[in-house]
Amino acid sequence: MIKNLPENKHLILFDGVCNLCNNAINYVIKHDKNNVFVFAPLQSNIGNQVLEAHQIDTTKLDSILLYTANKQLHYKSTAALKIASKLGFPRNLLPIFFIVPAFIRNWVYDVIAKNRYKWFGKKEACMIPTKELKAKFLE
Image (cartoon, rainbow, N blue to C red; front, side):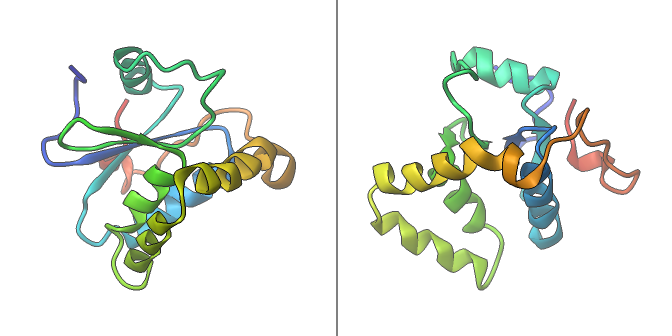
């Protein structure tokens, strides 16, 4: 059981020190018009709860995670496409890429994930949300 997860919300877990990940989260926040998502860094307490509950070894899985309101866990390209499906037009058209086999989508995802610090940089600590966004972030 994941504590502190609001009912009917999808939780996005992300690498809190990754610039690409933080920019992606800011993008999702901007386009989440239906207030579907809440967020937490993988490095947070709730991030650790999800990782432990699903026995995920972060040394083997380098990914954004989507923990849905119906307690399903998605990662890599599947998580990204499911997130996009909730963001409204035209982003909600991106799930068309589900026609591409997961091993191909995830290969592309893995190339980006492997190089994200080199290409986009890394922060010293997890981002701290503004007062306005604090309610969207779980600890």
